[in-house]
Image (tube, rainbow, N blue to C red; front, side, top):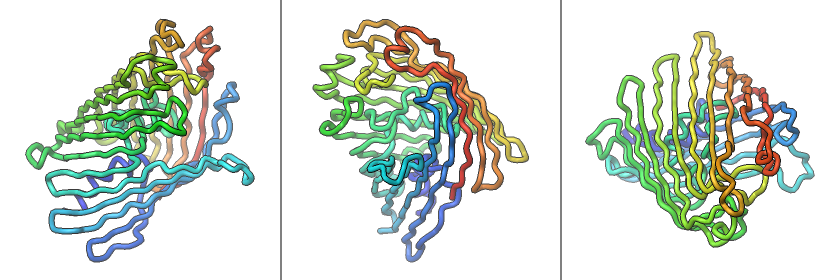
Length: 361
C-alpha cells in the first residue's frame, strides 16, 4: 500500500522525466532510493537559424521514499539537466535543476510537499504535451507563475478524494514571491492555484485548473498593466489500448510571454491544443497535433489588437527499439504568416523539423 500511494504522488514527476525503468540504488527496511534519467540526442532544422541546430541534453534524477509510520511516509524528487550543445570552455552550458521537492504522505488524507515542482495548470496541460519536442506549449513556460516548473511552491494533493470517490483527484498550491535577479517574464508575486482531474473510466479523464498571482511592480510598469496574472484551463483525454486523444483549452491574463524580447507579455491569450497518437504493434507511434495561441493587447500601450502568438500543426512518429531506446521525427508546420507584428517581435514563422534518438532508464 505504501509503495502504491507514493507512486501516485510521483507519477507526474516520472512522466516529466520520461522514466522507463529506474535503477534501484537502495531498498531496505521501508527505505527506497532510485536513479532514473535519459539522454536525448536531437537536431533541429529550419530556415530560421535562431531555432535550428543541435539541442541535445542529458537529464538524470533521484527519487526517494521512506516509511515513517503505518500511515505516514516521506518522499523526495530531484531532477537535473545538462545541455550537450556548448563548448567545454563555456561558463554556462545550460546546467539547471528542473525539479527539487520533498514532502509527506498521510494515507488517505493526501500529501503535502514544497520546493521546485510543477504548477497545477500542468495537471491538465500534460495531457497534450506528449510529443518528443513540439506541442503543449501555448501556456507551458518554466518559471512563468504556475504554468510549468516553478520555484517555491507548496502543493497539497489528495487522490480519490479521501478514499471516498475513486478517480477524483484534487490539488491546492501556493507560490511565494520571486522577484530579485530574474528577467521580467520570470518574476512573480504571491499566488495560489487549484486543480481537479476525474478518471471517468473506459480510458476517459477530464480536468480543470485555475491560478491567480500578484504581479511585480516592474511587470505592471511594462507590458500588460494588470495587477494580477491569471490562467485557467480545461481538458480531456482518451487513452485505451493503442489510441490516445487529448484536448485542452486555456486562457491567460497578464502572464504569457512571446517573441524574442524578454519583456513582452500579452494582456490576454486564448489557447487551443489538440493531439492524437496511435501505437502500432511493431513499435511505431505516429502522431498529429494542432496548436494555437491568440494574444491581445501586448504592446507597451496594450492596444495592438489580436494577433496569433503560435499557430502550427505537427506530424511525426517515434519508433521504440525496446523500452529503453527509441528514435523520432517531429515536423512542425508553421501556420503563422510574416507580418509587421511577427517581424517586430521576432515571432518564428518558419517550419521546423526535429530528429533525434532517446535512451532512457
